[in-house]
Amino acid sequence: MSPAEFVSPLATQETDVLIIGAGPVGLFAVFELGLLGLKARLIDTLDRPGGQCAELYPEKPIYDIPGLPSVSGQELTDRLMQQAAPFEPDFRFSQRVEHLSKRPDGRFQIVTDAGEVHVAPVVFIAAGAGSFTPRKPKIDGLAPYEGKSLFYAVRSRADFEGRDLVITGGGDSALDWTLDLLPDVNSLTLVHRRDKFRAAPHSVAAMEQVVADGRMNFVLGELDSLTGENGELTAVTIRNKDETTAIPADRLLTFFGLNIELGPIAEWSLDLEDGKQIRVDTEKFQTSTPGIFAIGDINWYPGKLKLILSGFHEGALAAQEAFRIARPDEKLRFQYTTSSSELQKRLKVA
Picture 1 (tube, rainbow, N blue to C red):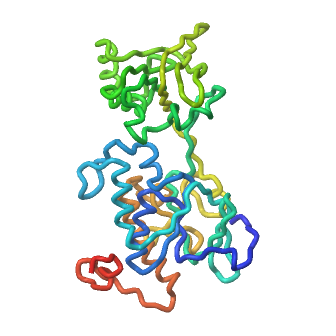
Picture 2: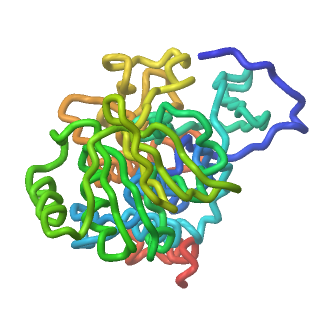
Picture 3: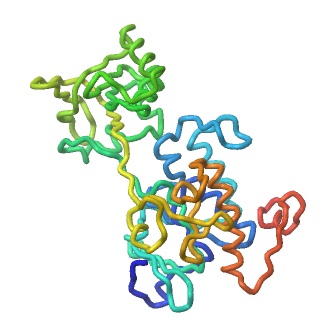
């Protein structure tokens, strides 16, 4: 693990369990830990809870969550936040964990890129696929438009209603949102560098049909430049071979995929699988370092399935061992929420 300079106890912020990642699995871990009387603090590089679920497909349906035949990424996040609320989790958003080290007293110390120092006897790594950022178009002058008229994900459909929208990309996200947003916009143009797509064939066929019907446009080419003032687009220029074409547009969505990496986690001396996932056992989902657990897509073990429901199961078992570490002098009693008055008081329903 990377060394970090120890600081005065007055400068540290202590808790029972530090959770790196505030996606669905991290949020459900708060609930499981809370049932056992453990407090959790979550640290995430994003500026809101939900992780990739809320960042990449907040309004698209998820069909494999038990008991919820269909739920959007944002709705699932909202429900998990509601479920965790009785335990008053502490969030640190827009921060990246840079250093993790073990203190002389056996607890772990985490230092973020914001200079905050957190200490706990247990660490849960629930970082999904790792740190991720959208791949951006390789053109100058993007910053003024980002978050105003240039977007890398759909967080609110209202941002595009009645707009002249250009979407770039040739994968599932680009095609899915092209078809999904088409009824909401004033005009829509899909731009891709070639006429072959990486999306599902039925999506490609549906897109080609609406182009043939004259309901939207398809332009072969790549982004060349953006035009507008004060962060508001007025046109997007497309380059195709030696020609450029300006397309009137006040909204731009680009889907070029994500850059995903373990980031500083790779420096923490944990056993890794192919350098991309953290090896854990299947009893407690503990890493090669006792007291550090990995749950969700970030971990690996034989038979691993990258499903949200698998991460929920992993978090529940990890929480049991977390209690034994954080409360070594207390006896762990297994209880059911349906019959335990103690748990119902913690849930604030009794």
